Image (cartoon, rainbow over all chains, first blue to last red):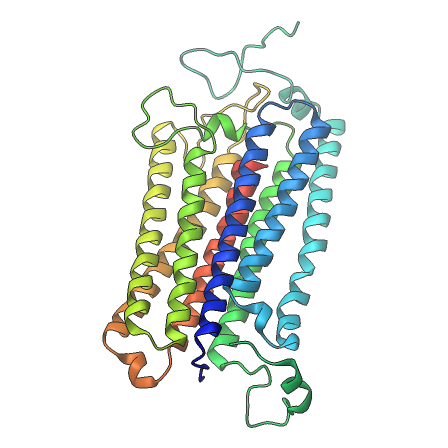
Length: 140
Length: 227
């Protein structure tokens, strides 16, 4: 595969690498900042929102790594499609299974009284902790 | 190395005699192997997500993963060590991109230098992961053993540690094999194998594998440490 010997071409390539590196670093820093922020947030709704943003940033990072580092963006369109289209299966995959998992939890909490009891029984903090919590901590 | 779109319209890509995607067979097959690996990792991570969604309580990652090497007993620095690991892998991906570029320019010296940096990055990441595993092991964590409590103080499940060690272990195994592949690439480069062939396409294929390993880590660290 012959390359043109134009210096500008190589310079452009290098610039793109640096640009994408910077973008990936910034996205990572924002993700970590949101992670730190979440440590001080108790409200479930807000936490879910922050997690959603983190997932979107993660997708953006995936786009940049696959598109530029793995060069997929510069390939022939049909080849890009043979990669991207099957990966869209993940949209169903993730949604379906997380929904299923959540449904499983709800069913367990409704119909399995032992599981429900275990989900509220706090383990008493002793020096030697037993595997099965015998002692029920008084809930005020 | 971009393909001009006007050429795509005029060229008969599917008439035989050439690759219809204008890409070497080995490179295309590496892409499709990576697709299969993506679904394997995806299946593991989605299994983790499903289990977590199906479980009422779960440990707080900021309570579990809060130490770093030489920190001592009372370290409370969540996300610090894993951030360092993430940046190490990202930078090693950048040096790999530079190695591939150097290969396209037939610049053997730059290929060697960037491959060495990538290998060092991979080894640094593996060392960090080894430390993390050892640290958790000394706290009583292992497959089948979970010493941590849920965030709400209730008894936790061994699913937590099982998934953690399995998925980070599977990923670490990929990093390890990637380092081995890169070392082989380095040796081949030093032996002038690619100069003889007239192209450094093998480095590109190894590069795809290495970027995939980096990409998987982005997902793994987000799922276990961040969300």
